Image (cartoon, rainbow, N blue to C red; front, side):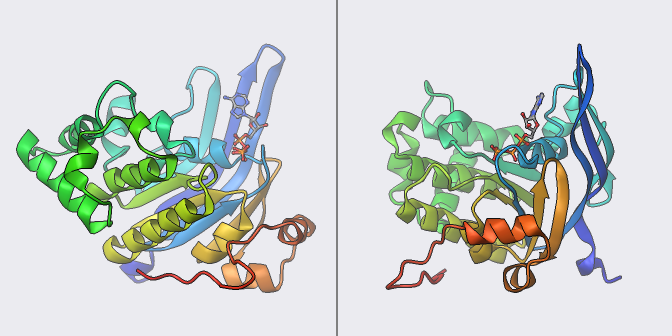
Length: 276
Ligand SMILES: Nc1ncnc2c1ncn2[C@@H]1O[C@H](COP(=O)(O)OP(=O)(O)OP(=O)(O)O)[C@@H](O)[C@H]1O
């Protein structure tokens, strides 16, 4: 297989169990998928289907005392499952960036955006403060965030959710991670901000060849963005397909049901088109 065809992120036989006083319960089982360079893999399923448990497993963010993760999760062929916290901290943010649903949770309210942006860059590079600040401004400009110098001086509460999410993505992008895990990145946003955020993710994928795991319960978002899709239900994958196949010819009853009830990013009068 050509190296460019290899999976950047590869999840094999992933099982996650929670241990309780009443015994062990499976949260997800038999999860298998891979993402190639520059691909967007959509992960869909209704609430409670195991999407976040899967992404937390990749990031190794489960409480190891109560939750057991078995199987293999490799990033560039390096096994992540079971890696020491110290090693995972180096990988999170640098090699795998995580964008969450509510960007406010990603920022500390008492520090400016600039403080947090620069600290993130410095935690993963040897740049001094001045150079880290310059990089932050450059990246914010490159993703069309207005007046970056001014933005850096603001506190998180002074920005709208959409703006904060775009800053969050700029922060993630500036370290050029191989993989971005975006867990419902647009769910909390108004339609205009949703489109800006999706456009931004697409731009990062195109410009840096970043592979993206896009988690959503919203098939409208997935149909706009993903190359391949996996559909989860009750902790298992029930269907895996190329995005066109999935929408043209869904196989599983659950996928058909999701498609029937899907919202869409298209307005009736004017279909949305990307302008990068
Ligand atoms: N730490 C945990 N301990 C026990 N059960 C958990 C834990 N984390 C998740 N679960 C359970 O695992 C199942 C899958 O949850 P998960 O958060 O992955 O769903 P999801 O598909 O991401 O849903 P949503 O779209 O609502 O975020 C749910 O039944 C949830 O209650």
